[in-house]
Image (cartoon, rainbow, N blue to C red):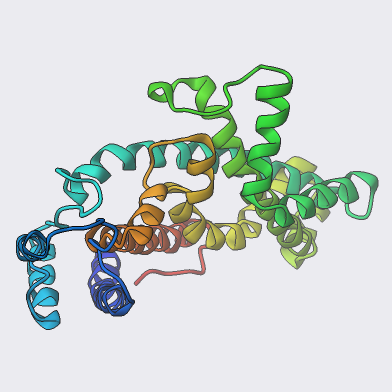
Length: 306
């Protein structure tokens, strides 16, 4: 297992290198620069700013300096958020996004697997149609519709929860953004669980367990173990997306997470902030896909890591 993890981590280095290289040159080739928004800036001041941020160097030299700093864990200073480095911004915002993402993922797994299991056991009945109908609606409605709708109902209409803000992570301020993040994932997980469990329940070894007279609960749990493989596969990119923050949800509810930095960096042409966000998301995707591969070996004995 350890050798497998090490091989996967080593093989991820070329992937990260390609992502960094492509992102670095794409953002710099695009028209505009980080100081174009400054009105009536003196040319000498602009020249000094470029010198300070090493933007007066040739593009290949900027690329080399960035890789050199990245090798030492330095993502560089932010051009838009003055007096802050990208690492400092992430140190404050990443825990916020990860807490909300983890809560949303746990909520989506608990309800998604439960609803999918109920729908599979009651295939083609009213419960099945109801669950799949709600899941289909959950998949098709985007977050920028769900978020304001929940705010309209539970914050403005019923006055049960605050409409936005973080308030140092108070529970009431977390509820609406976490639910907004969880609902689409819950719908997808429910659909995946239902389809996979229906197929698993028809497998020969499950029929053998039923013929032996085992309780329905035991048979269902045994089938569910194999049926969760597609769900686990989906959780890799889904978890990375949730943990690194949602741009839409964090904007709607005013949450100081990582997701908003991607938009702020892109609009302000903050090269280092955009690069830091891209690297962060890439690392999360690789790590969670590795975790998924490891979970496979526990769910399916036929899968071997070595």
